[in-house]
View 1 (cartoon, rainbow, N blue to C red):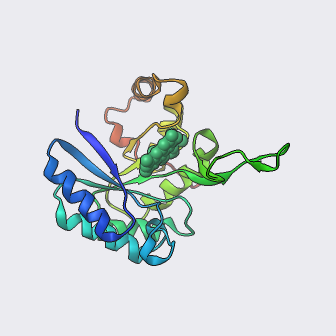
View 2 (cartoon, rainbow, N blue to C red):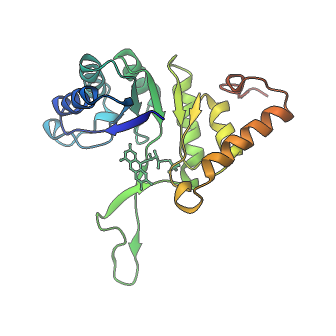
View 3 (cartoon, protein in one colour):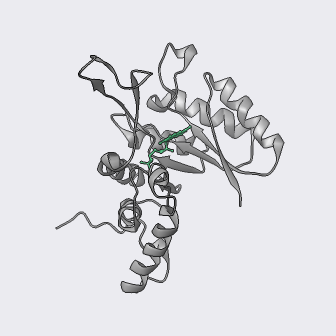
Length: 212
Ligand SMILES: Cc1cc2nc3c(=O)[nH]c(=O)nc-3n(C[C@H](O)[C@H](O)[C@H](O)COP(=O)(O)O)c2cc1C
């Protein structure tokens, strides 16, 4: 089974160097660029929230590898469509939408943060509706495939992502409490296709009908 390696860096050069090394390693199926980490050279800006920085990262990695590049989009952006297009134009082969949402929790007895890092990434069912909207908005502007994720617990959740425009889906958090989730999602999508007489799962992608 091909392995997708999720990589990150603190500078454009670092991303490219990591991509180059994994390319040289062999046996890697694809590289996923995690563009939600701090960019030291840009004074704390995030690669995933700035079209110019995002283009630079994707283009730099594109130059050093022929492996498929998946850009893992940040959810914390005012306009995902612009960033999605920037990643596509810079040479990304696919998009993964979405990463976790910055969040925090306070212990009201101690008035201290519940998380060691004070803030952390929110994942799971709570983010699903927001993630689906991000997929829908990005799918309207890019031609490259989108891997949808964010709170998928079952086939119905996955089908929602497909209808919003995703070509594939991924399961993160649910694996921690139900390791069979991915298998259940596959079986459930097959059942849905049988019931609806859909012969190719591609027919579901983007089939959402927002009109009345
Ligand atoms: C424990 C944990 C670790 C994660 N680590 C990474 C990571 O290293 N890189 C990344 O791009 N996303 C990471 N994510 C985000 C997930 O890949 C996924 O985008 C997010 O959790 C939303 O999907 P979910 O709701 O199904 O978990 C992590 C998520 C969790 C829960």
